[in-house]
Image (cartoon, rainbow, N blue to C red; front, side):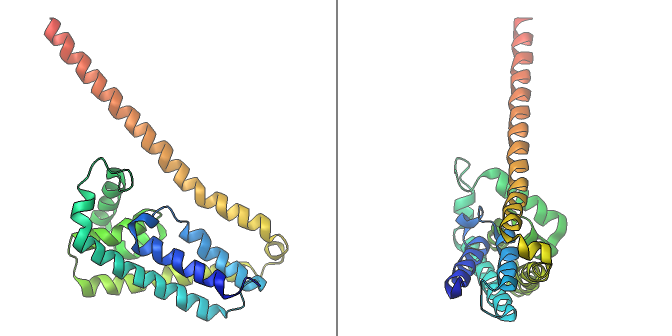
Length: 211
């Protein structure tokens, strides 16, 4: 038994990823899924309904904290282009997501790594109506935290997964890392293309000057 401390750790991680801007790198999706697997395997003795309830509450409280961080400190944090943590591309990606889906983005963003962390602060920066924000946050919290945990629990009932729990966990970790790898590759390609474009522009200007 991993006991209650495992659940406490999961709750803290979910809260940090949803509410604290520095938690954007945490693997919330895979951890929620793993929580369901551990409940099914008996490694977490807490009832499934209580695990889901606690994780959902932590996800919601995290969003509330993130919202007010955005209202109070967001503009100052996101206005620093040289920041190593709050990179401009993270903010731009989140803003595009927000612009595309509107208030629904609060729910949909739960399932998008990095975006689910920054969108809470962005809602605060934009001073989104608190009542509307908290309503969508609650819906998203249930769908994400409870939904993925329940999914992990029922998949954990499958004999193959139950008998190969270690392999399953490694597969989950791998799948959770793949999107991050793609994002890094995409960002590097975009940066390289931008630098090449700037170099071409400089070359053209120099040629015009020489002519």
